[in-house]
Image (cartoon, rainbow, N blue to C red; front, side, top):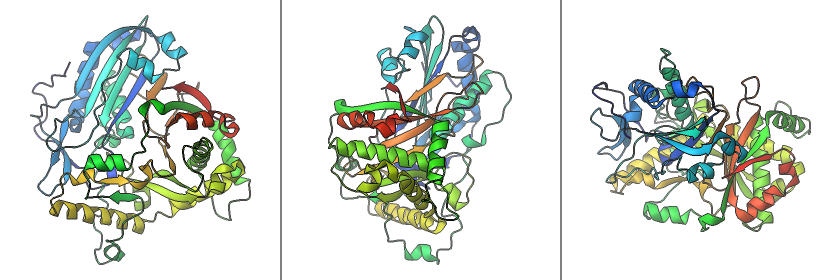
Length: 476
């Protein structure tokens, strides 16, 4: 059923420009399940009526989830709130004969939830001027047989990235518990305009025509043709998504090994995320080559980088301008496990190489090119850009470390989620989420969402360097 927001909505609310950073290239919905163990409080605190009332309260404070995309005359896109918007969030309830114990025994597999209709159909999320728009938020609550519940939610990544979605779910839970809380900073539409107050006579103007290696554009093809061009021709049946776990202690041990290897020079350092990126990249690239999915050769390795940090912008608020920080890795770097310290160092150096000047130049090029496409009458220019490393025809592997997002904070009054599950359809692009909280309510593991072609996944499972620290949690 659709939520009836009534006449309580504000008459005005701030809009957020989408095309002022790289977020407009993430046009897809991000789905997630949160699973709740059986509790006597589920009937009282997570009843359909109470959840609907508290969600209405939460949405009143965050009206952009009641917004829609607006394409302006200059072809820029904003996420605009309008109280007359018929495209409201959806909210559904159901009960199932599936039990919490059955879910747990299957590793809370996403496909098991699908078979019991606990999810919702995932739209493609693309912004199209003439197509029917989709709600910014869709929620479905399933009550499990014998106790327990599963909350399925998804938002359009262009408007609400993973951090914002889970921050909203946690905020909704606080509203459900009757807490008079202010809207978190992570859900406020803070301006992140990268080119604000930039001196146009500086070096940024001289490099405006130079395309950054990380971002590609093609105005000669239709968006559907671009999608085919940058997507490896593989049957969906041969793609295997899995969730693996690595303990934070094992990751600390790997980091200590890198630090003690003698590879780092005086004053150099690596983060745990750099080490994890190196480990994943080594093992995934090695599996792909050993399985002959990709030919033997060098790889492009990348780690997702939030540009706000090097640019000195506020780190909180909606929308995080992302670039995929690339470095080149020889076949030797990925084939031999003892090269892990060298690859971790290379990942760290590549991240540090993204200076404010380089990032401003890259964004200036993108804005200039986008404006040129719009002036030339290119239809839907926002669908002609992509990140080069996501071209699955290339030997590219990378990691997005989202191990700080509040994925387990949504306590509606019946306890925090005991497990969460998402879905990552992109091969060779590994998403890292925090694992479930430990006994001290602090996560002690990371969950890695890995999707590979079947032969490569088989090779990964046979890799002793991978299996020595990574454990299969569940298949899709």
